[in-house]
Image (cartoon, rainbow, N blue to C red):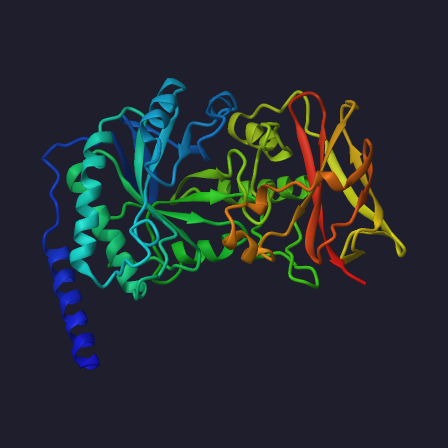
Length: 439
């Protein structure tokens, strides 16, 4: 019975594949899309309203005014949430939008299966009204058909690519005026044959530009227009961990240096590269609330924003963000900042070494937070979100770039954060993990 079902699945899949490639949509004769990719002499170029358009974009929907002010021209979303207000706000600022469509799990349900083609078809039909609604909005640049669509629901890579293409096919039938793009991490090697209705490949690339280049230009590679749909600091999955498995976050200055390096690599690709979206334009929590955030939670700008303004517009900022050069905890072993162990509810000092290029007077904010992946059971058992839990009540004395604090009572991993503000709208932050032991 199991073998019969497997054969039936494969037969049904092949039948759908045949339908996919035999029923291509056809553009009207002499149709001129609003946005399209054109190829000439092996080069790809994005055109909008008949004019060349290179994406200098921000991934996120916060601080849109600053995207435009600093020379950016586009933003990217991951879903249709608040699409009306986002598109309207972007249009007023002269920005375009790569509008995301959520597909697959978990957006289509945790019990969704890629093998259930009737269910897939139903989900695709549910997307159609949104394509109809937004296809003529003047801010629309292209459709983002899924973001890192995972191989869940019993589906293998071939099924995932098939579903992405099936959605892209529907989108292009409803809206022939805008290209389709999917965003993938570099582990997904694209396949032209399986995704003929996908115009652009988006890569979420942080420390893997070398692999991405091979996936585009290597044997059997994508070999069509591509963008960096997300790029920025190195991911928490790629850095060294502490002895207890906490990823070590980079300093703001190190994050900026990486972005400068990646920008140089991007500028050298004049063949199929059509632009990029810097990640994350705003503040978000992933590993920490500062890891990918180009802005602090209160809206101050980091060094990486300083760089993006220069990269997008060629103009240097008049006042640079400060730097936290280092952060130490004072223990019995002296000043330490790597694999730090503290005794429960004992008193310690934290000291930040900072610098401001213009000599601005700096003010400081300190935070102590649990490493929430360790306390995941507590998060699941209650509605309390530890990622937003600042244990500032442990801080006994503030002295600018130095504090005296009590280590948390409960054993486990934590982080101490310092933020340095220059009073000019800029901020620097750094954090170090520490582990509390009960003796």
